[in-house]
Image (cartoon, rainbow, N blue to C red; front, side, top):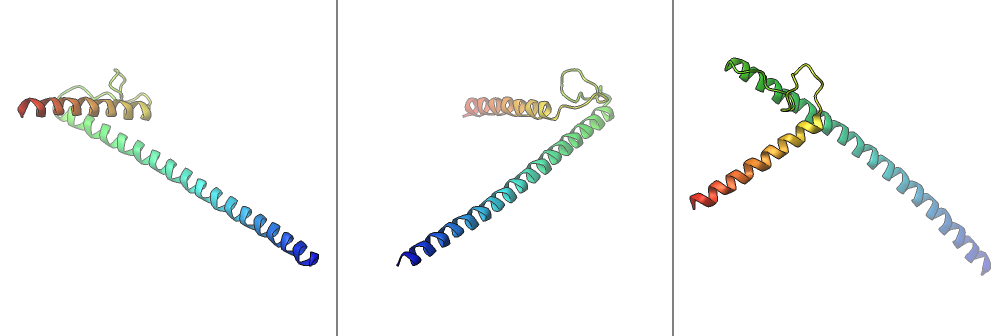
Length: 109
């Protein structure tokens, strides 16, 4: 009887080791994919921001206005663009516009 208990112990231990390894590989792969997704998303946001700024510059030039600044703080388009700062400024502008829109809606009702 002791032989069966010892064998069951080693089978259980081996099972736990295999499951731990499989879980470790699955977690590593999932984190790797998440990292790839994050990097791709950041690159897409950067490209989107560049495209928006490029179109804004073209529209401003076509309208005869001065060139649109990349961050809104007086930088010219030849200076490096801080993507996170641009995104933060766009979010702030969106929040301001939402506030104004809510104020307009509440006044018109």
